[in-house]
Each structure stands twice: as C-alpha cells, then as structure tokens.
Image (tube, rainbow, N blue to C red; front, side, top):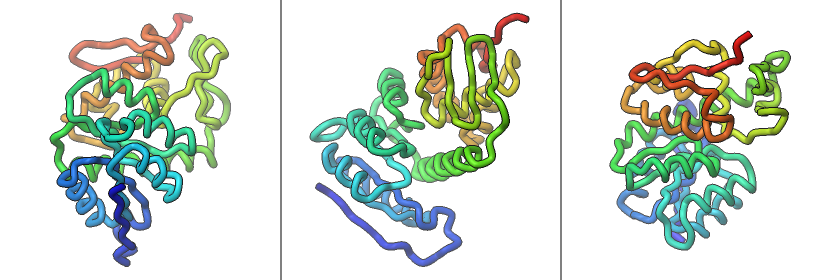
Length: 245
C-alpha cells in the first residue's frame, strides 16, 4: 500500500483549504505529480496504489473527492468506485490511459462524476477538482433552500428538493453531475443548448477542450432516462424534448 499524508500548510485563504483528496494511481511519477499540485493548491492529500488500499483508505479517511485511475492492481478503479460509493457518496474524477468512450461511459455508470484522459495538464486537473467540489457545495445549498414543487415533463419528473428523478413513476439513479445536467436542459425545455453553454453552466469550465466530457455525460444520461428524451442538434448541442401539448 502506497500512502502519504500531509498536514495543512496553514494558509487558510487557499482555495482548497481543509479539503481532502484521495489520489488512487499505481504509477509513482503520476501520483507524485498530482499530489504535489494538489498540495500546492492547499488540499490535504493521501494516495493509494491499488484497489484494496483505495477502498480501505477511503473508508478510514473519508475524503471529499477521489481521483481514481481505472487500471489498478488488486481490482480496477471501476470496482473501487462501486465500493466507495456504496459506503458514502463522494465525487469521483476518473483517469484513463485510453481515449475509450466505453471506459468513460462505464465509469460514469458506476458513479464517477467526470473523467480525464492521459496525458493531461495538471492545471486542468486542479481546475476540475475545484469545479467538482463547488458543485457538491451548490447541491448541498440547494438541498437546504430547495425550489418548490416538482417539474413534470410528460413521464419525466424532476424533484429539485430531493434531487430525485423518476421516469414513468420509477426512480432513476443519477450521479450529481447527471442531475445538474438534466436540470440545466430542463430549465429551458426544447431549447438547444450548445456544448460550451452546458460546460460553463454545469461544470463551470470555459475551455472548449472539455466538450467531449459533455458528450459522454449526455450518452450516460440517455441510457438512464431514455435516448428519445434528449435531442442532438449536430454541430450545435442538445435539447430536452418534451411532449407536445
């Protein structure tokens, strides 16, 4: 088990102050680089080099976020994600060495919130970590100051207060990112939102290089609520379809 722990550097104004990030990666060069960058951002960091160590550390240390490689000794990152999410909800950033859409969709399906394909810039990784944590904070705030009522779009129901979604009265499990993405589309049903708009609204990320992230989350969302409910406008973006009055 490869594990390190650093205490906070005392800079209370640091954006990542007191937040705990568990980095799970078996390549020492990559894990050291990620850990160094996140510590420079003010995060508390622990690392694990295999699947079993990752699950044990997550249970004992209760991190605020996981950065999780898919390919790991022991058992892979997908199984780590399943087991950790069964313990408690925690945002997960998946790392994959292959630009393989199947890996991405499976990762999103087991509870990951975002993914990055190697090689990646440490600047972008740090920015996305901040974005994921801000989304969790916004979700917690929304839970304490919920909108009233339930949005019904035909057989699709969105309960903002409980952050629950139902299709034909059946509960549909969505990750926090998928829920926010659906709400963003549902706020202006039938209106086409560009990938860049969705990236800015849901991920708070303005770099167009992340639009593939939007596409993969849309595909994962379609698998859960029905492909016919989200319309693709080629070269532009996506719209949430609603029943004709």
